[in-house]
Length: 316
Image (cartoon, rainbow, N blue to C red; front, side, top):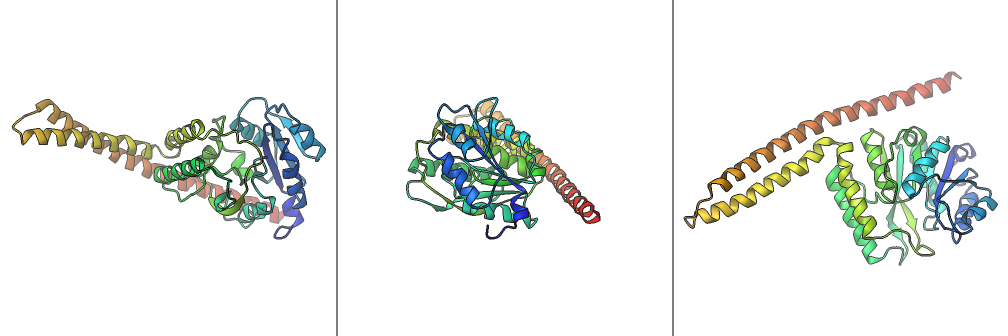
């Protein structure tokens, strides 16, 4: 495989969550084998077709997940493997194994712990419906506003993670929200995450993702996980909402005041909402400052552990 040594390839495990993917799982495994990857792990969600049989015939290790949902499958797979690096990829044939080196290279060079394949750099016509494309853009924009992190494809199913990261993430979401949760867990725990461009192909077969239902769940996850990433940012939303409500009521009070109509109680409510909202925002800034300090400490500890591991290897 161009760009990776054989010893590096052996450090990588390809994890493929599947559910009724008999149409694409064989070719997906073949592609990674052609690129030199032999350690392929399929975690199957009790498929009713020939997915498992095909995967086993291709030489992949196959396990049946104990629960349901992609998130649960990923969490269970992480507990079953022990490779230095894992590549997480969908079994629907939408991603190219030739891009695996792009995902692994930043980790091997030591400047990333989590690498996400950005699909929007190069995607085939028909790979996204107009609704899916719009939904992805909105959710990614919402993520950047909420977390202040410049990532543009947090929903990508093609990503590489270090052992230190995938063994320490706390995944609680059971469905398609897992990519969002993996991203948030990475930045919340002080690990380094970057994006690289990958090719995204049109899916062979019907997608299991419901753009409305799952899109709403993913949006809710982005918002709800803000508290896990930084409680301060969670308070920003609440404080801003209170200030906006206060200003809205205040405009109404002032408008009627010019018409010689007074609203004493509403005027008091206006003041309370604005003052309380500003206080909540200030508390948010303080909380965010403390959290970021803790995040920096976690990053330093991670780097220290890595340096100690390297020293131990050198002594051996």
